[in-house]
Length: 84
Image (cartoon, rainbow, N blue to C red; front, top):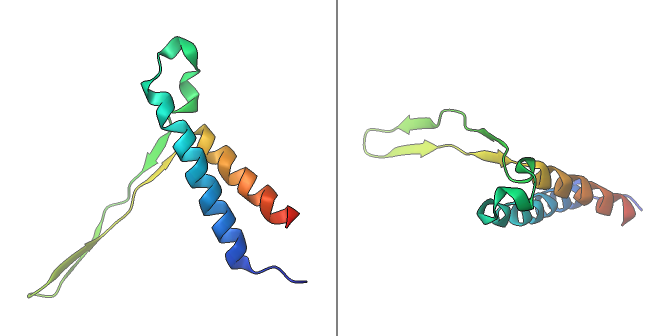
């Protein structure tokens, strides 16, 4: 049976969200209880694209925040995809 690529996308997105949810509460803990690299990460924010139609102005953009637990969640999502 051939697997759909949409299932891979869903597994990666769900794994990334799950890892991000696990990494976010780590920000409130004291630094001696967990390593800094668990919740600190890179933020990628390209400049937003603006479409000005005189009557309507549309601005589109996104921000990607990655930390170690988000990356591990993505890898686990890929692993789950290979198992199903």
